[in-house]
Image (cartoon, rainbow, N blue to C red):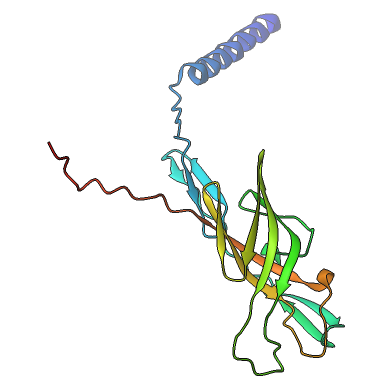
Length: 196
């Protein structure tokens, strides 16, 4: 009698398991395939479509990080670097939005010293190496200018420390800040009618 009960219980358990597995295997599964478009974010990174509605993922939140270099020997004060994530030194590579940026030469620094009154503010010119995969480009940038690289614009935003009249800045003491934005496509004027 006990053997019949055990066999009946095993058969019931086996039937329930078979029913559960069958319902999982036979249930319709919704598979969503999203297009491979990318959206450029303000920080230069790109996001793709995802999720059941194929919506663009959120851009990374803009984080401004302030870094202080204490007792800077140049001015005997602290140097504040406003956005350390987009800032680098000579011959130090940073990656912003998938583009590697390496300042390779300080060409000139003609900025007016902060403790002097000048007629012209001056500028800084650098040579940079831009890389993305096998794409490599060397360019010259002046402070506030930008250069097009692939589908992006690389802007030379800031340089630190500020100059002082009685102190020379060593090339290894410079910090360069960059930003990347999406390059706008060239607009084609299709409003002209052909002449026949």
